[in-house]
Length: 141
Length: 141
DNA sequence: ACACTAACAACAATGCTTGTCAACAAGCAA
DNA sequence: TTGCTTGTTGACAAGCATTGTTGTTAGTGT
Image (cartoon, rainbow over the protein chains, first blue to last red):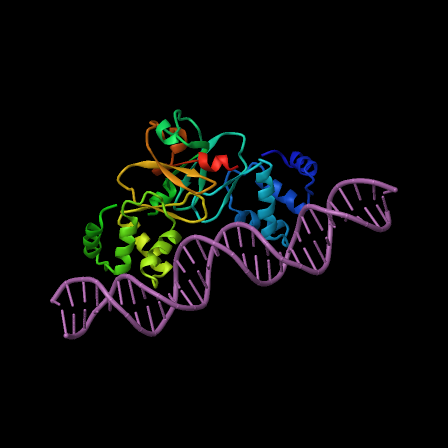
């Protein structure tokens, strides 16, 4: 994801207005590697800006997604997560106990569908989810 | 997934009762490769058994999952899908237009997390989702 | 056949996400 | 600056998939 100033320019270029709420969300997401849910972004935004609405956060996240500045992940945790890292191609490691998500760079080759099964199909995207437990959660089981 | 008679035995052994509703669901799932949603299972079950409730289908699917007889998939389509194929390790090919899901056997090696990123973490499961379009849907775009 | 208790159907409720809409504020032009 | 236009905001409520509640029905082992 680009910086707050760059995003401001991009939004204006697209005819989207840059509101204090949106800037707050830009700032919260910049450099965030925690893959926050929309709800948690909302909570953090509310600390500074008590009147911001959840809907506004969803809307801004979707605008950022449409501009290709963030990726919206559904890892089956019930709610959607925001990943501002769109620069590096990567997959995800999910702790099914605490819900924490870690990025995993793509280091495996040959990850594609055997031709026989790819027939009549165009693959646009590959998502890999590693599920497990961080040691911290494992110890408390 | 095992056959209806085997499942009947297994359920009884576990102290679970085998009701006509559950048997209907067993029969619907046996050999089903369409990865149905719970809702579509419910619709099909209702054809034979008009009073069956959606809750019952959810409950039976979860019981089957707990016994390891089916796998419950969340491919980010909004609702959960039931996969009775637990015998062959495989991944999934999803058409994001029509929602159809195809099984893909595991033919790639070395699909694991680089040690550096696996530190402090135990990986239990790897899920790969190939997203794209079947030619049929592609043509109509 | 009996008693015990799990499972049923109907209903309501949850959680996440989106729609509605009146009031408002950002951007633009003069 | 000023005023106009239009996108944005935020309170509220609705939508969807899934789960909780509850009185009743019906498998199960004896």
